[in-house]
Every structure is written in C-alpha cells, then in structure tokens.
Image (cartoon, rainbow, N blue to C red):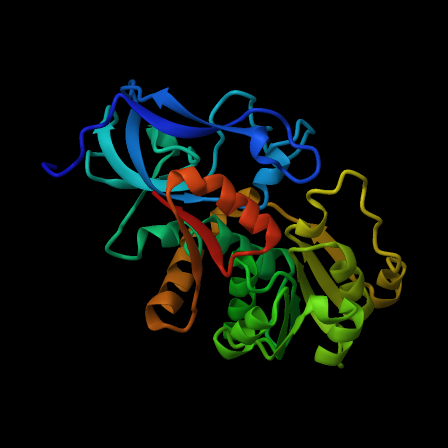
Length: 340
C-alpha cells in the first residue's frame, strides 16, 4: 500500500521498572525508546493504533504465580492491541492488513503471525475489537451464558456494571430474556447510564450506602445470577440475596487488587448450603471455542443498535500508564482505550 508509513528506527514503549507494592506508582515504570526490529520468518511488524488497558494487568505486575505470566522487569509490558501491518514476512498477512494481537504498551510490535488475528475495519471500528467484540466482550458472553448458566427468566445482578465487561453482561442478559437486571456502579452518573442507556431495570451507587441494603431494595425477590467484577462487600451482598439454585460467576475482584494484606472473605458462605448456590471462577481463555458464536450474535446486536457500548479514549502512548491507573480508580465508562 503506497500510503503505509515507513517504520522508524526506534519507537517508544512502556517497561516495568520495579514490582508495585499496593497502588502502582509512576516510578515503578519506565517509558523508553527501543529499536524497531525487522520481522523474522513468520512474523509481521505492526504499527499499533489502539491499546487496551485492563484490570488483570495489575496482577501481572506482581511476581506471584497467577494465570498469566508476570511481566518481566526491564522489558516491554504486554496487552491487547490492534494496528496496521507495515512489514510482513508471513504468509496470509499482507502490508496494509489490520490485526489484533497482545503486544501492546508500545508504538510498534514484531508479532508472530500465528498469534495475530486479522480484523476488518469496515465491519466495526478498530477499537471495538479490543472491547465489545474482543476479549472483554467474550468475557461477558461466556461468563454469563456458560459459567453462570444463565437462562431466560433469571434475575441478574452485575457489579462494576458500567465497565466494559459489566455493561455488556447486563445488556446480554436483557436481550436473552432476564426477568430483572440490577447493576452497581461508583457514581450517580454511571447509575443513570445503566438504567437510561443500557436498559438495566435498576441500579445503585455502591458509595451511597451498604451494598447489601441497596441490593435488597433493588432486587426484593432476590437474584438468580450474580456476575462479580468487584469482590468484597458486593460478593457478600450477592450471597445474602441469592435465590435457590443461584449461580455466582467470579470474573474479577478489582476492589482488592491493590491490597497489601489478604482481604477477608464473605462472612455468609454458609448461606450457600441453604440456597444450594454455587460460586465458580472463570477465565476467558478457556472459552475461545465460543468466539464464532459470540462474534456472530453480538456483532448482529451491535449492528442493529440493540447492544450499546461506550469507550473512554485516552490519546497518546505516553498516557498509557495514566489510562491504566484510571481503570483501577474506576475513571472509565465502558472500555478504556488508548489511541496512538
């Protein structure tokens, strides 16, 4: 493609300088210039256009063993990214193609072609492949439909409901015939968004009073499904309101990610005996077999306007760290995206 930019000799990237204790601090990171390599056999060079920052990245900054390998000190961090191929040494991917990959936190990335997924900028905005049609969207879809075994008529409670995953969970539940969808969020503005734009039946600001009391008021008949993005007092409240045979899907626990001491568990777990309820954690990586079905169904809802989504866009690779810290604070409405 004649208008494809020539790659520079060096480009900027974010590296982890030290492992954060508690809340990450700017001095835990380094923003540096690095050489832009020529792609080797089976590789492509991508000029990143959009980067994803997500809560799970906080776990990768620690050395503790987890489901994702820790970031290496002194090396570029990783995350979802989508961009244009500017050099290719791989069959099936050409210069000018757009691909989704996981070498974010940088301007240019040499990507193994087998790990890159071609995306169509004509079918949906490129940024959507990092959110509503990407990993966060599949997380919502698989967590609700498979892990929580959602069925028509269920009453559903979602925490972190104005975030990228939570807002999609609530809307999918409504589109699939939920009897009632309740969401919690951290501001009155987000609560209004949930009920007025996303179609939640009820929502509350968890900062306005005890979660258990607000949930009981919003769901007087209890809940059949709780989709947990927060943990802590939200999980305890959901157990307290769980109906017979209720299901809880544990997606995240953003309220405890920066704790330096273990957070106390729910005090009412014994109630699960009475309700025959179950709690199950899940990772989106175990559910990629649902991807074709997910893209087909959710893509159609997006095109028809039945499923709405928001993005919070931060401009500039140099502001990637600020965007990530903003996610931990809950500054975003919908998916937090960095536009390069």
